[in-house]
Image (cartoon, rainbow, N blue to C red; front, side):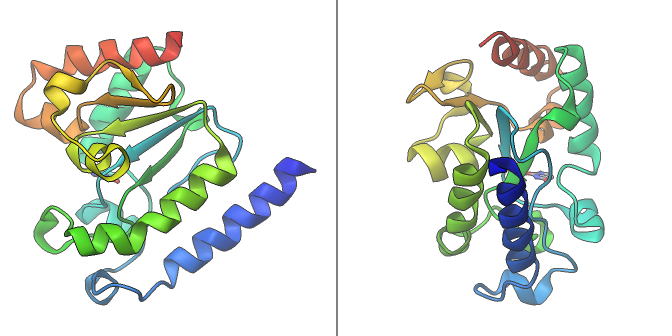
Length: 181
Ligand code: URA
């Protein structure tokens, strides 16, 4: 019953996100990307913001960074379908620039509500933007591979692997650690 009402609430939250006009990113987006996954997921992944492919499809991590994510999760023995996957900012920033502080502040209540509904055991922060938005500090290279507040786990953004292939082993090893928590 609890899960049914949570699914319904998540559905209406996603609907509100898709029609949101609170910040100017709503003007340039094609689709908002609320996120996806089971409402009773034990692990939530939080990225930065949709890119071009995600904006086209309305789904998180659907492009090249998403392929790295899927591959790394699989290598760590984690089923992507079992995770709730979302972003700090739900609409694509033009030219994939880093989201502005004002855009993050406008969008953050949606992420907090998603966390309230899913109540994940682990919230995995992919890169500096989610790290800063939820923990108030950044520096993923130093912070990665550890739990904060018994809940937040920090690792690289999969797009970082596209720039530096050596990071893939570290991302996989961080995901393995999450699987063992
Ligand atoms: N990068 C992100 O941070 N999120 C996505 O959904 C895709 C790429």
